[in-house]
Image (cartoon, rainbow, N blue to C red; front, side, top):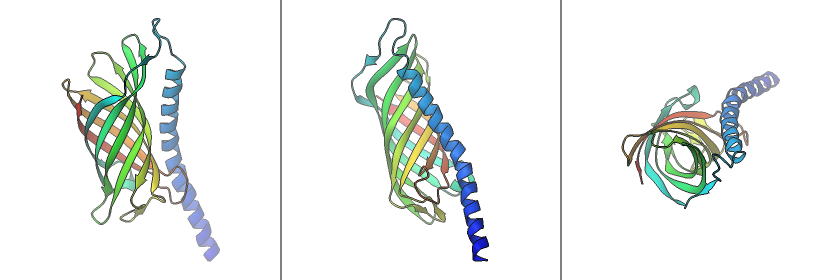
Length: 205
């Protein structure tokens, strides 16, 4: 009986990993392809990669709702700031801007919450003078606990990948949405993977 339960447990872990792996790989591949595309194309219309000063790009707040069964019942709230990194790649009217994203917030349900912080790079894809921008990135994440109510995510160290879209309503006001995936990258079981729909309001500097 113990052997049967052990086999069932291993089977459940494999199924969990199989569900999380495609999402994690999808985000990773998108980000790596974007980085490869940018780094492999340093010239466009006779222009070299531009270097810009490191400066505050935007700051605001986000609120998140669950996007998969593992995140059911969870909510997330955070404040964030985004900083321009020195690398800007122009392709005619199209630009790719590197950024550093920092967040501080909490995630949890009605029984238990965890403080969380992230820091990591992102790439901003935009047309000049067009209000819609795309945003892809991945950030190491640190939580105060790995138990979120009844959900055990395995470790306090996680990795959060995102794909998002921003709308610059005015020169200084932005609305944003991003889909995030947080997991421990297989460092330790359990590793259910938490997906969230995140909605943001920010000030652009």
